[in-house]
Amino acid sequence: MKKLIVLLLAAMMIVTCFTGCKSQEETTAEPETTTTVAPTTTEEVHTLPVVTVPEPTPEETTEPEETLPEGMMYSYLTGEIVPVEIGTRRPVAFQIDNERLAMPQNGVAQAEVVYEVPIEANEVRMTAFFQDWGTVERIGPLRSCRRYHPSIVYEFDGILFHNGHSDLANEYLNDPHCDDLEGIANSGWPAIFQSSDHRPGHNDFSNPAKTDKRIEELGFRREIREDFEYKWKFAKADEPNPMVGGIDANKVQIGFTQNYPWFEYNPEDGLYYRWAREVKHMDEDNNQQVAVKNIIVQYCGYNLEWDHSTKNIWNLGRGEGVYISNGKAIDITWKKYEYWANTYLYDMDGNELEINPGKTWYCIVLPKMTGEITIE
Image (cartoon, rainbow, N blue to C red; front, side):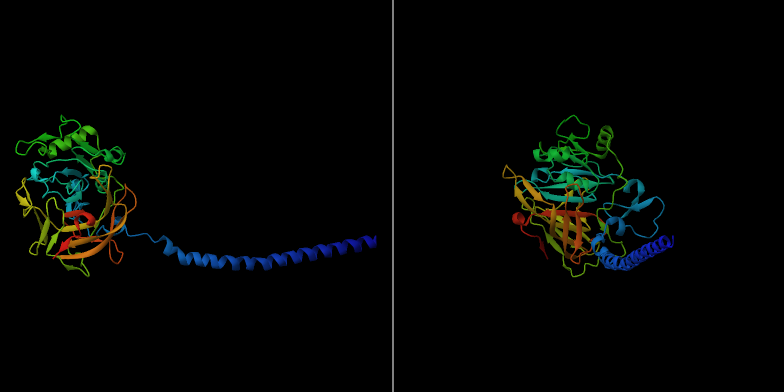
């Protein structure tokens, strides 16, 4: 019996020793595990801001802090204060004929934003955005669009009004991202009418009433979508872009050989007045010369399509450009990585470009075709 007790006690001591030793080993191992994890955690905390810092977005930076009068907001197109019923309205972008036989044009001086983009040969075409119809009576003459125009219009959440299109544009016009009106497909559509004061082929026009009626018939959304962000970052009217490092820009020549346009700066009102074909670029609708606050130049490359005439403009990726406002010009960069995405603009320090409030004329320039712009 005593031997059994002794044996049991010995066994208990062995178990106790084994258990105690194991506990001690586990206790010793825990600090080693903690020591291994700690540097990784510290490193992650240190590097996380570098990896995840987002680029500036219009939503974060463009909404001014001051309180606006009731019923007013900042325009998505101009950055100016407008009534909410206008500022929340989805813009309509019209493809405007720019050939000599199409002159004079109607509505271009009243558009909030105008894009001027090459198409075939040495031709350029205008895309004029209207959010506020103002006093405009008719818009045109209207012409066709190309494959990159739906993308440009989508950046403003706009409705594209075109009078014909190239075959290469079909894919994008039929995409759910694009709402478009087309006049040439059915001449009986109420949004198009022809005018006898312009030559045939250059005499298709529209007006606000006919356009709105057709938008209603097609069931297009008429207000800016809820998740839409400002395409551009606007400076405050009393704190304009300082144009740091800018050069004097009193005359700006674009280099398009179809119409040889240039802009002249008027320091009295801070606007750039446009000339084309050696004369003032006048809007027949209101008998005023085209004048804008901002000129943006985006340099792009291109290749020719199968017809050796139509241009496939490389507006995806990164590139350079120029921003011109208030008598100065500064170099900028741009980037756009997807067709249905925004083109972001940056100053040379990498900050999102601040656009001064007002109308903007946006030129996509192909230096291999036109050369770079000339600034005096």
